Image (cartoon, rainbow, N blue to C red):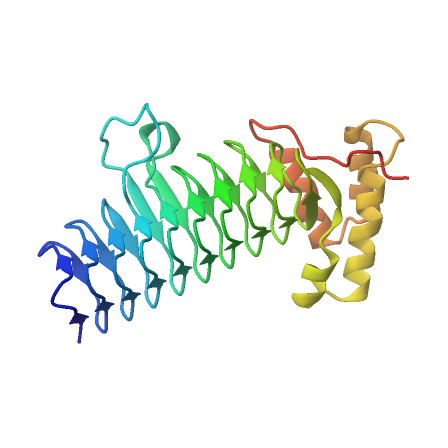
Amino acid sequence: MTNIHSTALVDPGAELGSGVEIGPYSIVGPKVRLGDGCRVHSHAVITGNTSIGAKCEIFPFASVGHIPQDLKFGGEESRLVIGDNTIIREHATLNPGTEGGGMETRVGSNCFLMVASHVAHDCQLGDYVVLANNATLAGHCVVQDHAILGGMTGFHQFVRIGAYAFIGGMSGVAGDVIPFGMVIGNRGTLSGLNIIGMRRHGFDKEQIHNLRKAYRLLFSVDGTLKERMEDVEKMFEDDAQVARILEFIRAGSDRSLCIPKNNVE
């Protein structure tokens, strides 16, 4: 059974799952779909062609589904898709996609988008992603599973953030960050691996040791990156986590790779 406050404005065209709660003065547009058990606090606005999964929670003054901040946007019927169990805190903003970026912005399940975070048009977020207060993604960014973006961080268009990466607070990131990488600074540079994050996610000592060794080899002073990648692949041919880093680098993007400020000895 849904519970809609008398002051909320919910368009008759909106699709509401069972057990949805909508608080005072919130607005839900005609093309919005809210999954079972969603809770929308007061003064939130959800509009556009927006689909939100089950048991999500949206806090006051969040803006979800308004048109992209892109001067090329021409009113196309693009989408915003959000998975299950995702929390969207106060003043967060999430925009749908554009024709130039695949028509869809996607946020995975079990994500935590803190106060004033921003997910721009055509971004693709995996599961269990955390955006701390004022973390802002420009258009077309990709953030893989379990990545954590610290407070007041900024990300250039088309940047990719690998799985389990950690971005330190107030960093400006203009290059791709490898899986498990840790970036700090403005402009942000790779400063090692996210060891604490790996331990929290249950990676054992051998896995962490292999990743550390692979990292030192990949960003050493010897040879070219291509040669070093070939050496690492041979040395760790059966290691799935090292392979994840190599695949990420080979996939490439429109951005350069975020690397250490100084070569790793």
